[in-house]
Length: 227
Image: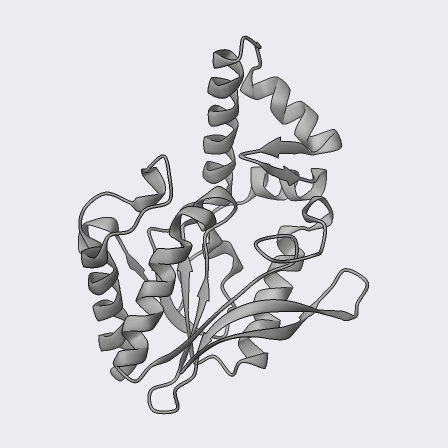
């Protein structure tokens, strides 16, 4: 059974605020917490991850993909969010939905709740994700006749935040991403793109889908959760 629900997500005041989540309920083989990649890559992979969740549901595996404050359907301002707060939100989501496993995607590896086993799909340091967005902004500015450099943009981002790929990243989030390193995998197994097949959908200019890739990733997750 699939549903869109709300969940009590921690906010920056110490209270909670409702955020949406895509959820597939199933009682047989646990619940997978899906943490989408950060920012623009989340838009490109949302349909793909929803397809993976549907395939898992057919195998009797429940899953949930929650919104975090400031992204997707959230009414919270993105510019006030921090990586540390999103890590707290991921922990809260794991508890609220009784998750048994976690799947992180790309730079969301930094948000994985430490108590869960699971997988990191194509893990990427948050600092690398930030540099990619900075390079994209420099290219777009050049095409528009403006000269910007990554170093000057970074200086501005640390002080006042910066808009990258349509997302207004606040100064604290910017600084956290800039200094972040990919954490030790711990209880998480890495799934590389070669295992899934083809090229990463985040590399495409527009959101796209590849059913074969979704089936390959779902198969890896289903086998792991059945053990």
